Image (spheres, helix red, strand yellow):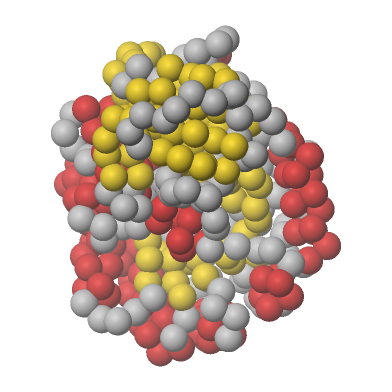
Length: 421
């Protein structure tokens, strides 16, 4: 592990709001100094030339097979991420401590990024029998989710929130009414009707969001409204914010950068769950990130093989890769003056770190040297064939972005370097 000094960087610490040109020094894997001019030491010097140097990005929602963890880590590093949380729907569902321990050991072997796990809420993600949240919390599960399967049973959801409150565990809930969404593949609108695609309304999201927030209030549980996608959902969240509740929310970069028109002529790479919604929904989500109503942005990285996508739209699998496109899409929104750069970085660094109790996400003396060097002005075109990911299912195929990660540093080690490539 070589000591590092970054020279002439635009240092941005979203936790404190710090934003200034200066140097940053790394010794033995931690930040030792930052700001102003740092005296030369026996360290490798990196000329940032005004690029942004920020805490390494954190992604709370990554889907990966446990046999592909090392590859996923490389993809994450290429996207500027230093920490990722693997969702419980791995090859073997993370519903007990032995499976979680196996995942964490595989992640440690990957080396490129910090790998954590989200425990399953129910055995097999079937929405029936509760897992042992207490034991898995002790074993290292950062939060608990039922993956892409909403908890339909309100009594079970109440028990989960009540039981988890004893451990201060965070429960992530997909706000989706299965009865209203079964058999659908798009957002219910005039546009989907013209395409002949069965759609479910945003009301299906609002109903479950309202239910789960009410149950969190009843039980005192910590709730993450996972992957909010609609204006109606944002309205529910704003109302919850007026009460003293531990309720948080995430949104995918796809729903901030795209809308239902991006389905185009039945583009299955843009088939997502939740579906892309109307432009008014997208703008409401952006406003909610900018004002802090939505806490976290996720990639919802979900690799799919070609055979799952090269099907009629209604039959194709839902999901997209996102670790390598999230930052570019976000910075492009910043360049378009739709998203504030500090709000973007907060939702990718200090907010998820604080929510999950992680030590990173900040620039501070003594903090882990998990860093990303960003060129906010670099133009590039999304070419799936040039990506690190084996899967190529991105809805941003052919999009022109401005801004991307040039270097990723984890615990003082350079794990991705576009400048030296």
